Length: 112
Image: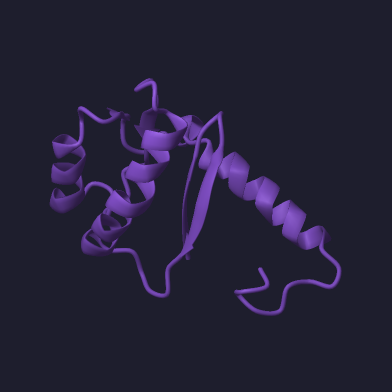
């Protein structure tokens, strides 16, 4: 599993997760990766963070962290089960297509 942050301005790092994402693991990603991405790419304060309503994203610890950092960037709240608003599906499709075209195909997660 991977976690990523992106915007119309730039792409953030792909964070490879060895295990299932939980609220606590998600909380370990937010300060180091989301916060630094938003402060660099959207230093004007106009960036707005969007995520789906997956259980780790909606966990108490993640929700609390986002509330505590609401002065650093905005958090876009959206209704549950709204895939048409989730750009990650388009990005995932493009990434999958690019991987399928690679020759030779990646054989390990690190090559991928």
